[in-house]
Image (cartoon, helix red, strand yellow):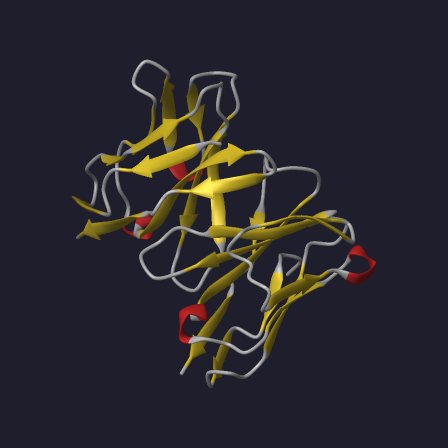
Length: 111
Length: 113
């Protein structure tokens, strides 16, 4: 089964600076990987997904992620953070007919 | 709003009581998932339905938990004889065919006193 590890429980960046949220995966076969965002009192929203097509995946709100098989990583990036990006971010992998989520990274944006 | 709807948003109950949550998926979505999320953790899979059939249950779903999806539309999740360890956010998600795009509801926050 697919499992994912989010390396940072909390990341703080200044508004306008780059964002990097790290996710590593473990799988014996080609994975399907996802990033979700959860704002307070809201449901999880899909940011982007990797399903064995292009290794650089572009998502909503200016986010993108690069699948690196050699590093078993699927890190989420954004060139310039905005205050509205403050939220909890979850990396997820597909295992059979369900998603397995990481423990989450709380992103704080400093004005 | 035609998103996934969950009710109630919050539920406070005493230990030993039974509680029931409801999830209304997006219309025409044939798959419905239940997840549980505790503080500081990611969502954990509980169970899922394809139409009215419950196809998989997690080991997290003890005998006190039961989920139904009559007629393949809304779903209910019941917890009997609640325990303090059941306190969590219960999330529902639906999709039109698979995991490629799940739509999540805002969840039901359960507090067991």
